[in-house]
Amino acid sequence: MEQLTQKTLVMLVGPTAIGKSTLMNATARLDSEFARVTGFTTREPRQNDEPGQYRYYTQAELQEKIDTDSLVQYAVFPTTGQAYGTELIDYPGVFNLKDTLSNAVEDFKKVPFAQVITISVVANPDDWKQWLQIRYPTASNERKQRLEQAVISLEWSLSQIKDHYWIINRAGDTTSIASELIELVRNPIPTSITPKEADELYQTAKTLLSYE
Image (cartoon, rainbow, N blue to C red; front, side, top):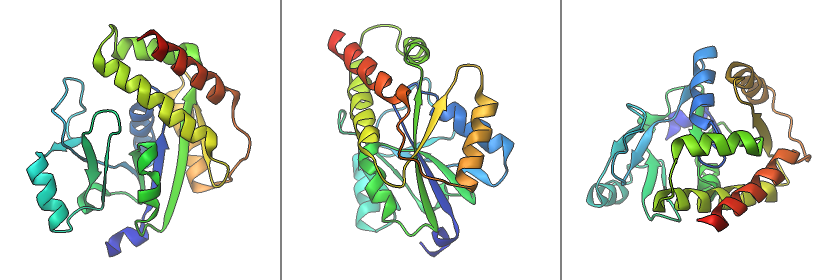
């Protein structure tokens, strides 16, 4: 893993449909030193999966890679039991952007990157509810699992008090938000101030989950 010692990992943590993928794609378009981290999963492909974002492994294939020490890391999604992870080929940039489960953050910090930056992504709750409705328009087990994970993710973000950063996503303002992300990563200044959107979003996620 020696090549990782020259790279920065930028982990984006936030609930489903908060706009992490859109933000990462916009950032990579604006600055060629930024790239999205690809990876693998043991879940089945979904219709809305981005092309090239995942390699799909069976549990047996995953176990073989674990046994041969071929992985940078992997984590099990707590509400589904499906694994997500990465290998060395998945980190092509100087600054590598990764949509990260909150329960995987500490494992990533153990990987020998030159620098690791963790950013929680939040938004106005009304915007998020609209984005969530577009992705999951009807009640389903998957929607419930995603809301459960949203609550877990936001609880984790709200508990962070050291070396943590926030980005507030805004509807229709992706390029500006991507520019803010680039500036934050290149000149990181931690803040102890939790944006009000984080608390509001957490309460909204809990309320929506109670309706499922």
